[in-house]
Image 1 (cartoon, one colour):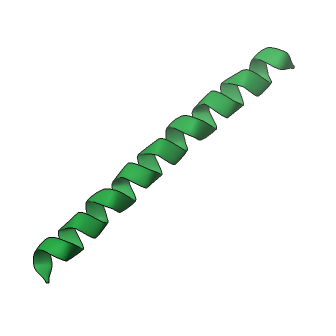
Image 2: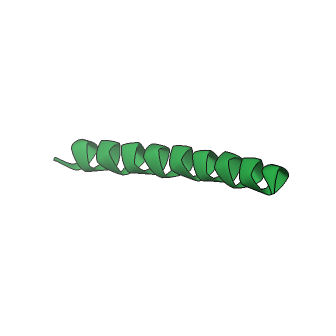
Image 3: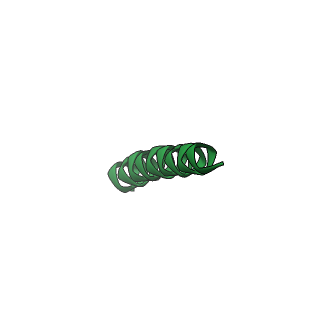
Length: 34
């Protein structure tokens, strides 16, 4: 069971990191347009 939990944690980190990059890019675009 433990390897599965670790895998889920890494997937969660991956999604969180991707979301952060996406939001950063979106914010930068809006700042440049403003």
